[in-house]
Amino acid sequence: MDYSGEPVSPDNDSGDPWIPDNRYEEFLVNAESATFEGIDVTITSVTKDSRNYLINGHPARHASFIVQINGESQTTDCYIIAHNNVYYSEWYAARPGSTTFEAATASDIMHTFDIAL
Image 1 (cartoon, helix red, strand yellow):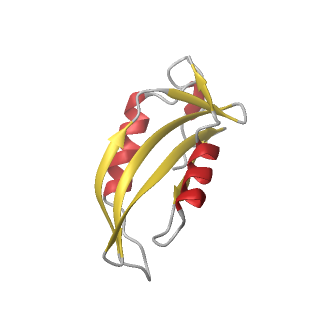
Image 2 (cartoon, one colour):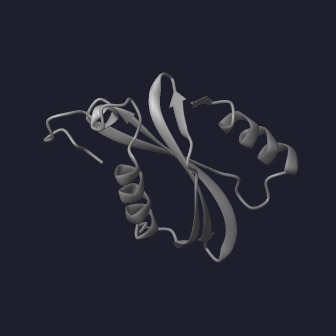
Image 3 (tube, one colour):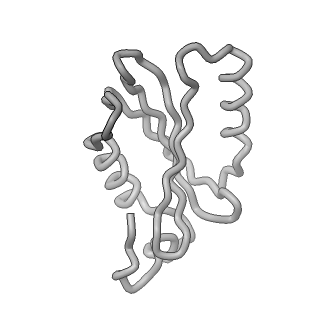
């Protein structure tokens, strides 16, 4: 999401260096209604996270999604990250068939990000 036409950057639009709730909610609504070309993906549920994070010093928010990919259900984590006038989203999902070790290792990595209090 590009907010370069706005007078302040997304990580400062509330006066605090965090992604405000209205931007987070907007992202979730857009993610839930997203369509994907070339792959059958449907987002079936979203779990919000009320905490603020810092990823490489940039404000971030997190959400978990249950998705159906080609008919198979799986959980995916997403972080939305603010940098200058743009929000980026980073998604992680363990594909069906991943070992428990692979899924746990990747999940542990995702949870090493700093929680901003």
